[in-house]
Amino acid sequence: MTRVPTIRVRVPPEGDAPHRGTLSIGEWSIPCTIGAGGLVQASLKREGDKRSPIGVFPLRYGFFDSTAFPDMPRDLRFPFVPLSSDMIWEEEGGHYNRLVFAEGTERADERLQRTRRERLFDVIIPIGFNDSVVESGRGSALFIHAASSDGSGTAGCVGIPREHLVEFLRRLEPGMLIDIGSAQPDEPVRVNEEDGPLESVRFSGLRSGPKLIVIGAVHGNEPCGPNAILRAISDCRAGSLSIRRGEVTFVPVANLKAYRQRTREGDRNLNRDLRERTLAEVYEDRIGNRICSLLREHDVLLDLHSFKSRGEPFVFAGPSDNSGDVEPFRHAQAEAAFAARLGVPVVMHGWLNVYDRFVKEKARLGFKSVISEGVGTTEFMRFSGGYGVTLECGEHDDPHAAEVGYNAIVNALAHLGLIEAPAPQASVKRAIQIVDYFLCENDGDRLEGPWNTGAAISAGEIIVRRANGKTVVAPEAGFIVFPNTNAKPGDGLCYFGVESPRAFGAE
Image 1 (cartoon, one colour):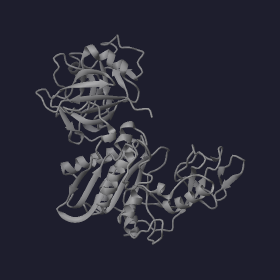
Image 2: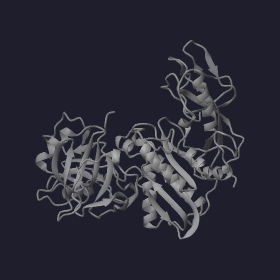
Image 3: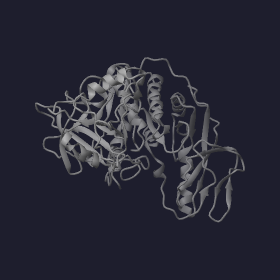
Image 4: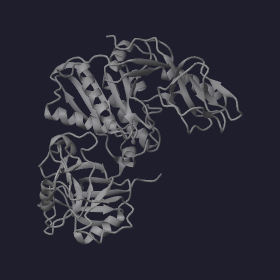
């Protein structure tokens, strides 16, 4: 598997110069500077504290001053665009931590004069911190740029010695990450995600109440969960979200290996076949054991996800109360009320029973599969005696998805009574019950249309066109769920849903 190229910045945990560290790309290593105040947890970073946030952040593009740096290499792989005199990075107001164009040149010229006295900003690469869901006051204008000649600390940026700047630029690659942290005195600088811990942050009210767990990045290429959860943690610490009763546990990144790689999975899909394993064979098995243990400690789960294709956010809920063999359940009413108050208009249900039929059909056709592959965090939570939902917040790279996730967290806390806030109203406009599936049986089987999840389809409309030319049509009016345009034999082409008879939103 191709690994995402990463710049590693490591600062000794002790010493007289908390701003001096080492920057490495692979085996290449140079000295660097960071914030004059040293490192700080990303959630505690504040404007003007002169500290650099700990964490892994994206590097998307860079700027260069063509007048001050006429020798800027033009054959770089990393994207750079020229700076203009009216460009500024907003540090206050409604465009906080955004590149804006000043109205008139006086303000821009003053900024340029201040930042270019030592030509520190001839080249800048913005660090993707606090820019997905921007929070005013949490830190702005963090860049990689040239270090001061005296090696002094920055205002929070990462400084590169000028003599190494061109070589550094040539080593940059599109899609690069920067990993900023503290170096352990007796360990290598590199982080081994195989041994990375599962971080959880818990807030306990002083009165009894339900125990909620909120999980993000079960799939590593879904950033909305971590972004929303880190914002909620910061607000809990600051007191703007004050937990008065019960408990909430936040797990920002469930799958650290996949998250660092920016891939859906590390060794396998963590949200399939989730169970406690005595002999853990791969990374997701090991981390899955810890997640299962956490789920057992809680009453309610909110698992934040996102999706690849276009579509509106939706909640995935569980079955009606039943004593069946597949997914017995007794909290359907409480779970439905919870799902309906997370702020999104669509809820779906009916997954595991249809998946059970799907697995049996695969076996009949000679494809290997087991029902446990349909078990993820929410199914395990119900198995453990609680209830929980998956919230699909939007598209992977849509910054608004994190806002959907954060609002859902606040609504969940209010609905369960963990914070003192008005009870949220039900927002569900449509409920879809999954009732059937369409299996890819042979190479060449394909979906007839370019649908997204939730797309409406008429009775008799062609859904699947088989490799032999035969077609499969919708048995009744309904909805496409989880379309798979890259399905291989044995995969699901899509699931099929209808208007649900269940009432979501009733207490």
